[in-house]
Length: 162
Image 1 (cartoon, rainbow, N blue to C red):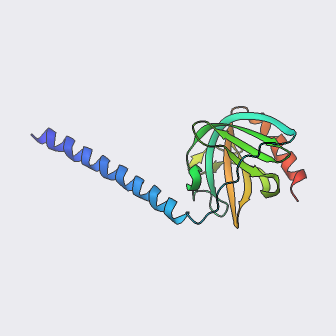
Image 2 (tube, rainbow, N blue to C red; image 1 turned 120 degrees about the horizontal axis):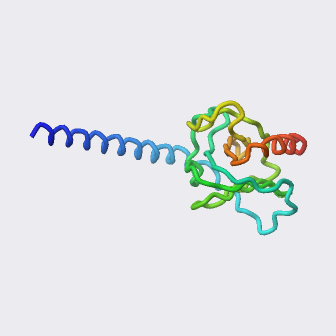
Image 3 (tube, rainbow, N blue to C red; image 1 turned 135 degrees about the vertical axis):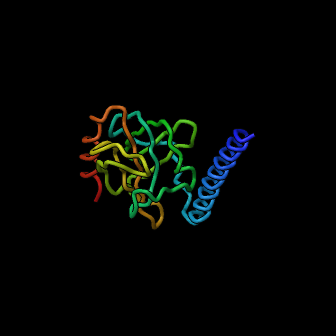
């Protein structure tokens, strides 16, 4: 009897934790409902400026806080992804989710970071693209399978961003 009561208490506790996480995610999405829609991927992307890199889309945060995750339009979900840079902008093709397109005019910066959105990788473990969505500056983290691509991204965007 005591064991059953203890198991039931643990199950209820876990369910309460899951409900709290779900409510927090829903409330965050409600607070971010005023963000503009993501730009659609254009039919013509132009010339490819950097070869595609495979890896993990870590997430997107507001530029002012590396842990303030953006959940608007599915930006909060981690996924395997391919990152590529074209003349028209950057495309993050996420597995199981709609691609994220960042127009070239909205790309502000690229840098290496140790962490983003609760994913801590250590020094230089993440490529972070800073971009503009409406009036908001966002940081999008990408952990490449081959980290040797990071310097070319940082150099290329440093030269092309005004």
